[in-house]
Length: 117
Image (cartoon, rainbow, N blue to C red; front, side, top):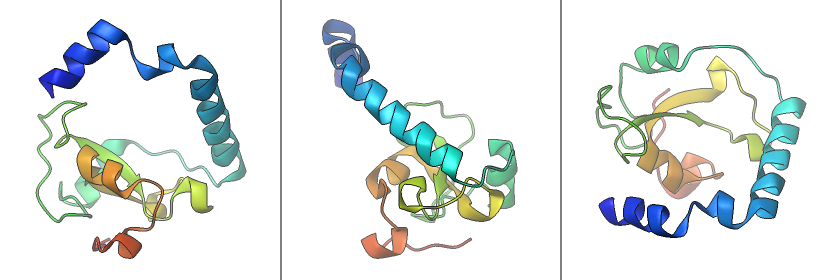
């Protein structure tokens, strides 16, 4: 993890290196969010509903670990926005950043990851 931090400090973040690609990714995400049902909620509501348990690996999530640590908390869309999912309490679950990154825009069951919620 320290290597990644050092590399970013030395070489810059990929968003700075490739601003056109970053803008395209941001535009696509905005389009998907705008087309989707969007419900307002706080991430803490999701973590508490799921008992601070990662719904992908089923291990506890430590609320004191901060991003970008792979064990830090994140919100995962069960049906990803890229696949037409909505941003609502019924379509989100608690996950570790690392688990969520591994899942990407796939359905967890397709990757052999279980779903509890």
